[in-house]
Every structure is written in C-alpha cells, then in structure tokens.
Length: 371
Ligand code: ZN
Ligand code: ZN
Image 1 (cartoon, rainbow, N blue to C red):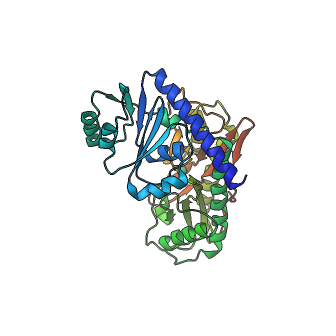
Image 2: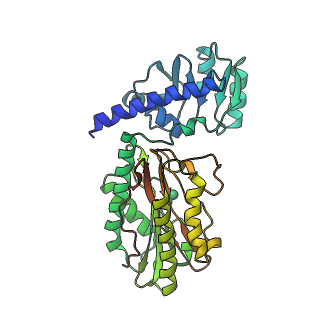
Image 3: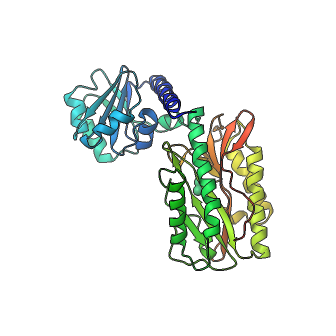
C-alpha cells in the first residue's frame, strides 16, 4: 500500500467512525459531543498536534486549535464532510460567540477534561446541557481497519529489527540508560518517528519492577535484562518486550523464562474473535499459577494498541464479562513473572486478531537469547 492510498483509507475510516459516533450519540439522546482527548482527535481528523478540541454536532464538525498549528492543520486534516476549522486562543469563547452550539441541547463531554474547563464551558455555553460520557469514543477504535493494521505492522517490524540490531552492542558495564539510548537511536535510523513511550531497561534485581525506567545501573554478567519499547509509524505504535541474558542464565532463570514463554504462547494460540477479554488473560495466568508463580504475575495480560500505547480492550481479569474481542483488534500479549529483589522476566508481542486466528506482528525471536 502506497502512502497516498493509506492516507485515503485512514480518511475514509475516520469518516465511517464519525458516522458511527453520531448514531451512538443519538441512540443515547445526545445532540453532539465535545471531544477533548488528543488521541481521539488524531483518529478522527488525522491531526498530530497536541492542542486541539472538536465539537461533533448533527450537521457539522468544528475543529478548534490555536495559531501555532494553522499550517499543520492545512497539511494533516482529513477532508471530512461538514468540517470547519477555527483558529483561536480562546476556544470556549469562540464556541459561544460563533454560536457553534445553536440548537444543541444535550452535549456529551469526555470525563478526562479538566474540571475547571467543564465549569467554564457550562457557564459560557448555556443553555446547552453538558453531560459526561465515557467509553463511546474509545470503542470506535478497538477494531482497526487494514490501513491501520499495516501501520501497526510496520511499527512492530521496526521494533523487531531494533532488538536484533541492538543485541550485539550490549556489553557488560554499559548502563541501562546507554542501552535505552542505543534502542532509541536504532529505532530512528530504521524509520521510527519516535519512541512510543519512555523506554524500559531493567537489569538484574531491577527486572522485578514491571515498569523499571532505564537507570544508571550497569549491566552485569549472568543477569537477565528486560527491554520494553515501541516505535511509531504514521502515528501508530508498537509495544514489545524481550528479556535476554548477559552471559549464562541460571537453572531457575531458565525455568521462569520457560514458564512465561509457555504462558504467552498458550494465550496467543487461544486468542480468537469473539473471545472474552478476561478469558484470554486467564489462559496465561493459569499456566503461571500451575508453575507456582501465580502471585508474581501482578499485571494484566495485555492491552489494545493504536495511536496510543494503552487503548481498550484490556486483556484483564477485571475486564467486564461482556467484553469480547472483535476482528481487527490489535492487542499486546505480555505475561511476566517478577521475583522481588531477585529478577524478572516479561515477553510481549503485538497480535492482530483476524477471523482466521491471531497473527503476531512482532517478529523478534522469542527464545531466551544470550549475549
Ligand atoms: Zn511494553
Ligand atoms: Zn504493553
């Protein structure tokens, strides 16, 4: 797929999602929604900047941003029907003076918006009634369409290449931060637009911290090292974790690694369209519990990825029972075992759910590699 056809498909997808959003809103008796969450605005409009908000009302889409983004908006915004751009430093005032909410009686807003902002909007936008609504916008993005899967696949591909390129550079005495910098540099060289999130490098006993940011700790022989990072292509991210050993792993380290790997493989094999999100988690959790490490796997199995690193659906024991995985979902599968004060193992891959089964997008080797 070339760049232009990808962009066309993304634009068409945004348009379809806007239509679905409107019908969901009217089903819930809303006249429109005030979208303030930046990743959602990116999905719906193609805008990659960090300051914008939008109003989706029955006949129009109002996009509000400030003059820093005027040029970017011209380049990036999808051609959506009824789209009007308002360049303003006072978006709430602009909405009222331009009468953008005329005829809108009941407007949904996203609960992540600051309370003070809602307070001000309620005052300025009277008599429009503002009602919080969660979930509806997020759910539009759970199933990815082919152009999005293609970008996610490329981001996963780059992450996999980075891992293989970086391993030969790993040396005893190198700090976790140096290794993180090496990962970031290689990713950029291989075509990533940036780090999808702050790179995690956790070695030795720090490996027991599921979110151990890279520190000044130096890598030592015969220790496990966990790296967790992601790349960005066309605004879509990957998220991959590998654990490797510098030198030789002990029998216990190998055993724990094997348990995590089996838990992950079983979960990936079991994944299918229509599966309950909590059942996917349970498959991996059962294997880890059988091996006696149940209490050391304390986070959920995975999460959706897309334009942000953590999106619905959560593959979690606490996921609502009614939550089933749709075709097109792209999720991470990332079991881990963390032994406090000792070491940790996590393996994470990105998986695309198709009617034919789970397709793994990250291709880096999954067995325990030694450098
Ligand atoms: Zn990760
Ligand atoms: Zn993750």
